[in-house]
Image 1 (spheres, rainbow, N blue to C red):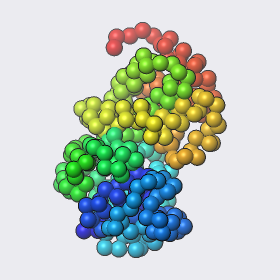
Image 2: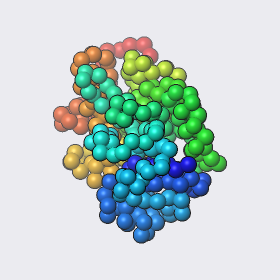
Image 3: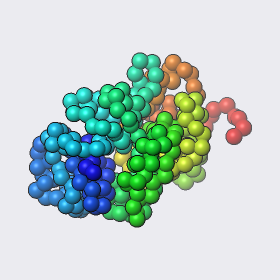
Image 4: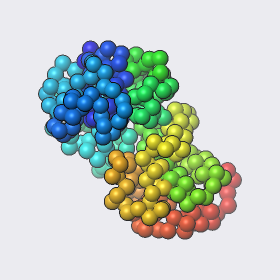
Length: 322
């Protein structure tokens, strides 16, 4: 069986390393020819995953035909902002696994990455999501994840990716799994702001607990199952992202409140929360669902609201039962 990984960033590379280390022929498709050449020459992704050797069964290429020829599965590990344009230009695969986290506001509704992939390709799509930092997966540190979608597809993903250091659970709540993965990035931006302002452990615990409640409120309104948001792809991913030094979203929130310009926040990689919160607020304007933390993040990031004033507004909200 051959697998094609679409996207040679940190996450795409980590998944390729995971599969190739099991002896599975794996094509790692890079969007830039010079990146593919550098990967082949050094057998290392020095830009996104330095220090991790690429296994023998991993073949980097910038040729989409070469990557997808004979592949039974295409794993989509692209930034959400590049997802549609990139997929439109690529040959089709028999089925897809979306490993992209994000939200899209299109035609008056929120769409998840798997829905976008499904709409563009017309092929079956499953999802892989959870508290999975690429740096740790590629170094074979113990990790758990969720394969979501129709049960047959989810089980195929589980069988393909499971190994001594990567445990995969199945779920049929594909939408809930993806919504948790998108919302946690927004909450991680807020967690980074708390860190940057040195507001303390109490504040961060309150933020994440109430943020989880916000995730559940939003996710169930969008058709997700409540239990999903308390699992690996919701609470688990939130904890990993909100506390880790690996997290670009947490780091971006911290850097923003310490004075870095918005346009510089992605100089170390894509910050998906910046795009997800835009889509979420566009949707919220139509629905009126109460999402105070996400709204505060949007106001700080895009409207220039002082983060301490945003905090004061949250603390001054009408008293209520938990």
